[in-house]
Image (cartoon, rainbow, N blue to C red):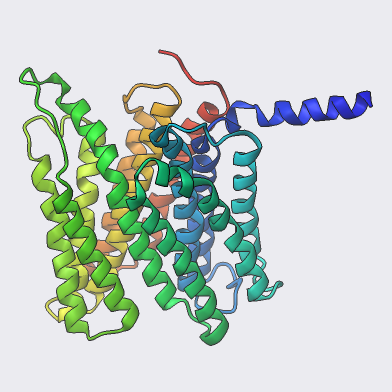
Length: 396
């Protein structure tokens, strides 16, 4: 009886460790580690150094795991940390948080066993994590009246189901990945509204006239509508011309959001500059896709636009959320450590190399350079944040 009580106390103390006190402490480092792992493995696969581990196009599976592994993990860390605060509900912590982290990890392991396990088993195992996440956060989002954040998560779950159907029936992942990309762009643009308010108003704090930054919802809603329409057009396979015009509308709508940013002093901090660049990367990415679809630019412009959206838009935005939320919720002020500043520069350089490199230097293979710039960014993040998440909150 004493041994059982002792074991029970040990288990309880394990789940009360600082790492299980908030969602960002589990999912942010796991997501960053998986980003490094994925880009290194797929880089070696695409360079023919490692054999293709799965019986399918390696590029499709690379995109799949970056969406449903890296980005989904980061999204889970953001939601499990921020939603309890917004809804004034207890933190998602302890055994519940550890269970969510374990489900995410099991899903990643199942993916790499796709050659051993049947696709049905792998996709069912992977479906456990988003289902559990929805069960945990949806009631809280509903209570906080932040239901607009529910839709990108639900669309992402739909994307995973579409991927399962596509792979099982025809061995591809095209439509599901298109839905996933749209869902994450919608999620990022939605989540950046409250994040940018904090960051830009922090930058404006030195002004004596009390200027306040408040992003106008109609502009963001217009961008979300255009991107949703473009995503639907890709999924339905409508004409390139219609897709091109919708991509161009998405570019204009995203860049229109920046009207609110053009206030003296709004870009005073590195955090604000990086978030400002995220919108530019999204806008230019959609414009490049439009140029390729409409025949105004070279055919490679579409792929360049995809990479600008993926690295400069989604990855940089994810890195900034991981950094800003990680610092704030760990008790630190918004002062950017030099290590993370170098990581941001590395990630921006990776975006420019992978998206613009093939257009400017078509005879040069820029992919190895992009990989060598992308992986260090999240490696530096891990070096800085792993010690942070393993200890109690810092009190300045």
